[in-house]
Length: 145
Image 1 (cartoon, rainbow, N blue to C red):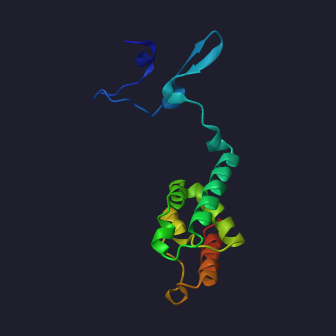
Image 2: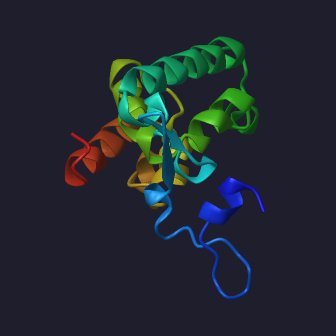
Image 3: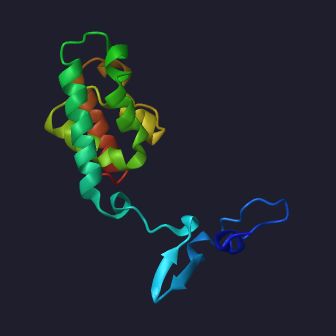
């Protein structure tokens, strides 16, 4: 058994116990060496700049490649749009900023990420300005603004 394997806590069924994974490290010559279970947090988890840059790159790509697309399903299934949705809750404030700056079809992404029903009244569906206002009001009510 190698040294790393000896430091990995196991539970009864021979699966790894991750409950204390941050505590796993060894010191070699005064330097802390982290096991794979305790890698330092990637910079993008603590520094918002890479997240913002990634969002901007994806949003610009999505907008430029769908600007002349009239079928909403094609617009919201674009790979860049889907990748933004995959960014999860961290993307919500960025989407709201973008929506405030330049209204666009960010509504399905907001609904997908937030897991909420659309706050847009049925009679306002299709009116991008009213839809934007409804989502920005939702953002205020849910402490995003």
